[in-house]
Amino acid sequence: MAEFLEMAKDWFLGLGEQYGVNPIIFGSIYVGAIPFFTLSLGWLVKNYRKGKSIVAPALSTILFFISAYLYLIIAGKNVPWWVYGVVVLLLAGGAYSTVQKIRKRVDDSDGEAAGSFEFDSVVIGGGAAGLTASGICANFGAKTMMIERHKLGGDCTWTGCVPSKVLLKAGKVAQQVRDAGKYGLIDGEPKIDFKKVIKHVDDVRKEVYEDADRPEIFEDMGIEVVEGEASFLNAHTIEIKLPGGEKRKVTSRFFFIAAGGSAFVPPIEGIDTVDYLTNESLFEIEDLPDELLIIGGGPIGTEMSQAFTNLGSKVTVIDMADGIMMNDDPELTQILFKELKKQGVNYELGASVKSVSQTNGKVSVHIEIEGKEKTITGDKLLMATGRKPNLDGLGLDEAGIEYTKKGITINNSCRTNKKNIYAIGDIASKYQFTHMSEHMAKIATSRAMLKIPMKMDLKHITWATFTSPEIAHVGATEKELNEKGEKFEVYRFPYSKIDRAVTEGESVGMIKIFAKKFSGKILGASVVGAHAGEFISEYAVAMKNGVSLRNIADTIHPYPSWGLGARRAADQWYIRNQSAGTVKWIKRIFGYKGEIPDYSDPDRVV
Image 1: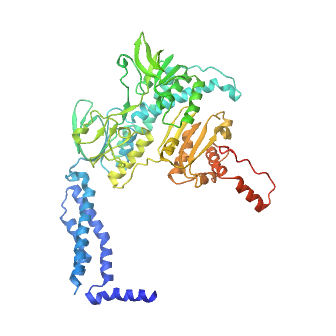
Image 2 (image 1 turned 180 degrees about the vertical axis):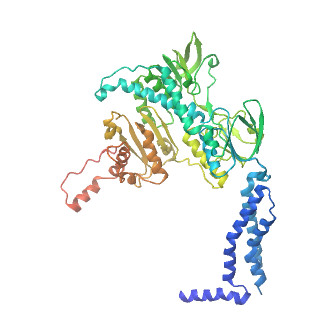
């Protein structure tokens, strides 16, 4: 072998004497020219984008590209014709590849010099997605504009996450007063001033806005914040209708559409004659309704049914489905359903809404269940029937952007069919969560501004509904895994075995994990119970980073923390992988005298 290598080395070095070309010199020139070629290429692209001359950088790029081949041509003698053929092919292939790289790096300009645009990036919408995208673009050194037609913060701050959680907390405190006896205290009926409750909701909204969303925060980053309505004129130009009626045209290399979504109200007969509420008007009411009707048993309807019940309203939830929270694990939603009914929420499920009407300030919902008609009457009607993307008025057709009634069409990098335009958040996603909007903003801005080919993480999407008990999920559902034919085990662990849950009187709940039997790889997890959102976060980190149930079980968690429940649930992987046969061998090897545990129940919990 050594002789063969020595012969190969002699032949390789002998090429210089035979053809006048030293392979080592050729390779050194080739490798040494790479960084200079890369810098020249960057210089060329930068000048192109700024509209400057590209002659010098183009010549520099070409020189370093062909430098090694020039040495071959100049120094070579008696070089076989096929070598020159290979050189020609390499040059042609390299030239094509280089052109493609240049085109890829400047394709966002649509044939125009990037320096001719007023802004590097314009973000349409100032909600969770828009705020995140604007901040990232500015941090990358991009000249950025953010346009919002209402107030910065979007639905999350003003009509969604923040106010709903404040109202839920107020209701929970009221219910804790009623349930004080279970902690050894004296039960009582809370005195509720709803006007003060709503004022508290508004105060918290303003606090969040002042701390994180007000324009000055983003203007300090160098972002121009504009109040107005934006509409595309073409793929690089928008027109902004300002509050005073004036119009302003703006051009930009990149656009990020983050116009969000709004409440969807189905065309029910009589709906236009009723003063109904949506999440956009619910937190503006001043009087607590004696009787609240809610159409929709999803997250919004379920959270608000509990909040208003705890604050003293009689609440009835109406839904065409046979259960609530249909996107969550049915075993766990049943636990939540029973708790909500126990707390006083009324349900009319499997109901077809025929019409609605309003008389003398009372709202009536006319439904049909199993062929029988029924009318339910209340003071207020909340429509919690889903959301729709805010597509109107954006001028998407003028820009040539593809979309459907479900939202703007994007790829896994959040890019539309127009290479310089991205869509993020509720306007382009079926996962209408604030955290998903932020995730999409990070993906889109990294892809557009830095050319990093990031893609949305659709395998580890989390969601949580903040009722008491909470319900949350990450990854694949049990139904999805069964439909794929995936082999997996289901590991259940009840809250009644979490000591912290018992001490706090919140022992209703269940942790449910879907994982591989032997490796313990987590495929998905669902939790119902107190702090389910925090539990699901631990499982999300585990799934994202390949942490198995065994790894979690082997990790020390403080006692008696809520998080210890995650470790106890992971312990069940060890329990499930034990068998009577294994224990028999252990007894024989070590001479143990105890009894073999009963492994006959596959669902036993230890």
